[in-house]
Image 1 (cartoon, rainbow, N blue to C red):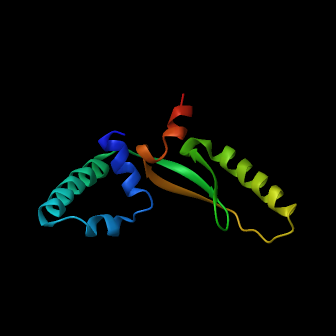
Image 2 (tube, rainbow, N blue to C red):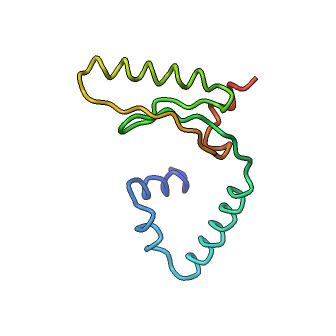
Length: 111
């Protein structure tokens, strides 16, 4: 087993707080510096506007901003699916700004 595989196994199911709590002072400083660098990259990342179709407890679809009609169609499909269950259901279509890394599957569809 490689060192990386061993570490992955050790960290399975460990919360971020538990992981950080195991680090000594110098390791925590290093982790903070790494996190600051990653946050800076995220802050600089290009954002796109997407329609998020969501229900009471789950997202049921996401669509790039120009594809509003597709988002509304998906919302209607979700309502039809939920109506068959007999439960009450709320559906929303909201325009949100997301980082490109958060919606790669939508950007892959972009022509």
